[in-house]
Length: 337
Image (cartoon, one colour):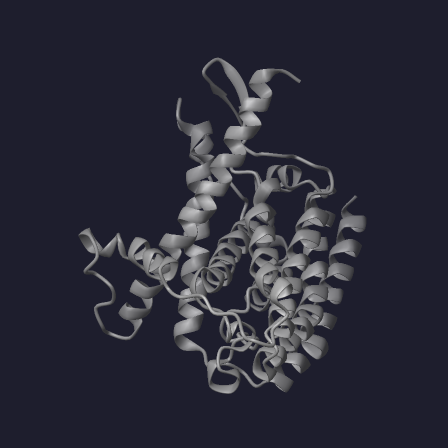
């Protein structure tokens, strides 16, 4: 290990943090503009050219808002819960590759922060932590609606993360590795979504439940729980929950693109002379934006489903189907080998 390598890691970590935080800000603007299109209205366009400074205005508003802590809340947990929620969202993409190995300033540089041989296990472990923040936020608020929101989030995560875990096993079986770099390289000729579309659909559905987005926004459910687990939060603490939700949207979109859509690969792009090997990050970004549009589209068109039906769908439909997809994939892989 030399000084240049340490500098390389620091720069890559800083890039990931800046990308995720800037991505969060402009994903909110993207969503508001797209929903406005779906609802045939204009949307935010006053702050800066084309409304590009709207996220800055929203951030300043939240910074200067008064922050309140309920009198009977557990103050330590109340303050820590937003932090516990946002940190896993920021670090989960550390193992997602944005490109291959390229020449930069005469040095071979890998376009990913870490290539660990248990990359998918890392993702599952880190994504599971954020639910603690939501549950603690609900409990620490000492508010019955917030507590119900936290409990709903816990039950939802347990129900859907099992199906999500089985969906993760399918690309592992197809690539023969838990490393996300190996999984992307195994899709150089054909994306896994074409080999196992069923597992891809199940993973896409569980992704919506993982980030508590419509139609699975049960922990918030304004009409039932008055915003649920974050009812008592305001100012920057509320902004951290908001930030965690949108960063998780970006993260799960990148993970889905990596597992089933070929990651940074796209037909013929790497064959472009000179610049081809450097286009991997732009390919992954384009796939992520398309998947984020899917989040907005679903939110704009589908109503929230009833809670008991949500749980039944998770345990009676997604769980057996995800198990079946793993079984079928394993048998086919064994027969082919």
